[in-house]
Amino acid sequence: MRFLPSAAFVFAASLATACGGPLEEAQVDDSSVADESIASQEQGMDESCVNPGVVLAQPDGAAVTAVHPSCGYLDAAAASNDSSYDQTDCPNRFVTEVSGLGGKFAQPFVEVIPASSNVGESACKGVAIIGSAFGYKNSLWYSMGSVTTTGNWIPPGVFFPNGLCILRVNIGSGGTGYSKIRVTGVGAALGAFKTRVRTGVRLGTSSC
Image (cartoon, rainbow, N blue to C red; front, side):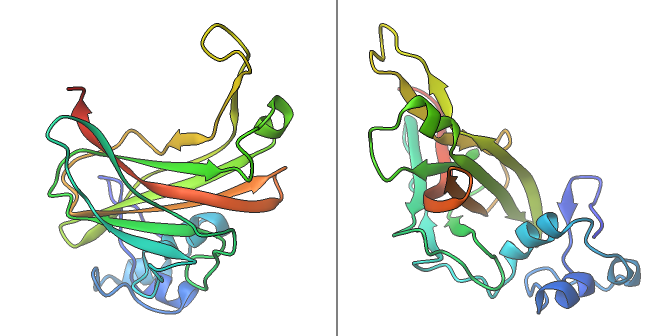
């Protein structure tokens, strides 16, 4: 799989062979691309999440239209109904596609939704959070970054007497110029048991 200098990637014959079908929105006649293989299985799995066959409906995903705030910040996102998200083109990922961006700045994120609101330190640090984001412009999908981390525990203090578990993580540094963005995510309690997740983008660039 070849990445262009601008960090764009083109899905052509190599991805069609690896993942079962071409990306209709970005077909390229390039024999050198066809001869290259995906560098890693995980990278290939995430990149396959922009295939046209990916389901953008529960329980595996969702399609969201952006509503841009006049000031402040606003999420354009969706949460999985449960932890059963899984599909052939995007295994073990919940996929949210946000359209209507109009080229405005958007910050992708992934957030784990815990089974209980009472999450202690050990449970928080044991939550695995994984996500990737892809932006679409000029008939190409661009990688916007990926993240693999765990829950962030803030010890008890003045503002959080019982401590606080942060399970939301930004993916990359965001970007402009995209008409739509796909964000994938998976969460796992104790690093093994899939959980509900919420994926999408944050819109806006300044507070009111």
